[in-house]
Amino acid sequence: MTSFKTRLATMALAFLLPATAAVQAEELGMADPQRDAYYEALKGKKVVFVPLALGFDLTDGWYAGMKNQLEPLGISVDVRDPNWSTEAGSRAISSLIAEKPDAIVVHNPDVQTYAKLLRKAEQAGIRVLQINMKSAYSTDVFAGADYVDIGRRAAEAVVAKCSAGTSGKIAIVQGPPTAAASAYQLRGISQVLEKHPEITVVSNQAADWDASKARAITETTLQQHPDLCGIIGFWDGMDVGTGAAVKQAGRDKDIFIVTSGGGGKAGCDNLKDGVFDLDISYDVPGQARDLANGITSLLQSKSAPGENNYSLYTQLQMLTPETLDKYRNFGACWTVDSLASK
Image (cartoon, rainbow, N blue to C red; front, side, top):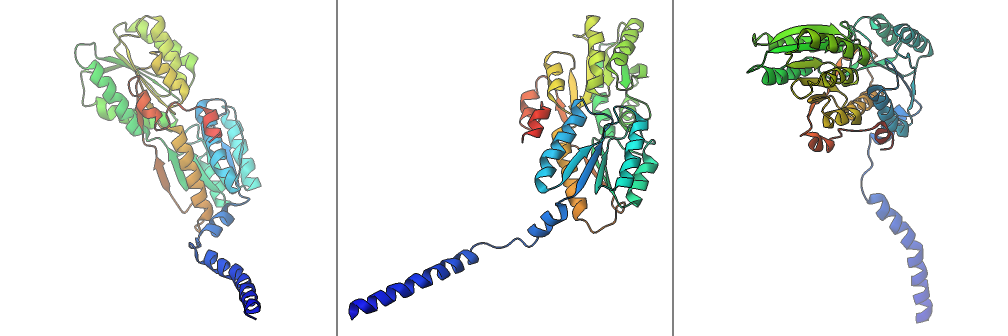
């Protein structure tokens, strides 16, 4: 009899255990009330990137970084490559307005060309983000460099090298004058130089982001001003031409070259090789992350496209041959493959 009662008690306990375990499991932790809504808002959405062109570190880095961070969330990321043609870029944006993706990321060639199209895209219900070079028309999000600050820092670095015991002569090699990266950077430079009459700008010319033009401009400037002390260039992809002209003239040890760029491996290599003395990085991996965060925020927003006006300015990194190891810990000297594989 006792054995029978014992068996009954054991059977009852066996039936109760799964239920008890289930209750315990259910009581552990807490459900995130926003998690499901987050993934639901992003799943199946489409983002299209319209760069100046693919095939160089900035645009390839942004594209790889966005794909890496957004596609695991169920967002498709595509690209329309105008290959440096503003007409092709305008056609691409016009086509996208008809196709109505959820968001467009635009790399503006200048402040005016795409302005009306960006407004039209937002009026059509498309989220629009701008990367690194602004249009005159402000969209929901701009992520990119503070070029006024870059110009200020570049000018301060050149002043520190060329104020005392030198000719005080410097040159500027800019991109297209109508590009935001040129116009804003010049403002920062002028704000510094107006306080330093000992510095003279003997050449200020546009190389249009073209390394061969930058080289030709620099060669002519060096012939006209053999006592040149410093050069401020506006993009390290273009300024390899500037550095090549200075090196060919045998002046690479005494002319201080400042440039700026995305902080990729090519820029780091040129610092190590003495092509540049200072490369002010606006951190492409960080900008890709800012773009991804901007996109996911807008796709969850209840506001209509165009109702926001957010700026996400990059934290700048002052890359020199001496600081490279330090900034590698913060993402500098990246490659496109490293951004795509994270």
